[in-house]
Length: 260
Image 1: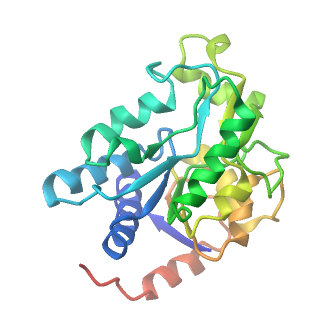
Image 2 (image 1 turned 90 degrees about the vertical axis):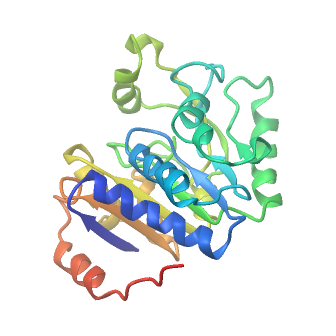
């Protein structure tokens, strides 16, 4: 696992965006795994800027989103369909048929989850999966206690997650209790993982994920098992890392990637 510490949220977002650029330069028809939430927002804004100002091409890209709330229609302002289209998809040239987001309103969730897994496989797997992290260390909606070999499925949200997400809804009672989510095993199948985290509220979770034991109680710790995982954090989110100097030494010594 590579840990990259940047001075602030903006620099963290730009660094993550450059990794996406490197993947697309190598493979223009890459399959990208997308995450929602406030943390990846800066990454998407930078990718939109690169597309608009520097002609970064997404026309052959396929995407798969990690998760979606159960019960929210695609046009609901807090649905992840709405979030992704508002902040990213409508600003770039990804073909509509290449965009895949779990359905929160399907009539058959088990069948849909099987189809989603099969669709990822048919596309050759995910080349780069973008991840955020919850304050309790979860990735996607794989709450504490989730199997580290889990696949796409329905998941009951924890009280912590509902509390954390209540700020996006008018009332806490409006926060959905269930979500459809890629499993930890599904995420680990991606060829490359990039997790972004920002702010002091994520410092404990980041330290547990990077330096703690691999445990289902902190599902982000499963990234330690991945062959190519990168964690990009700002100063505040890095506050609890005990091996910070070592991570900074490695990053400083790393040769610069050639520009396309």
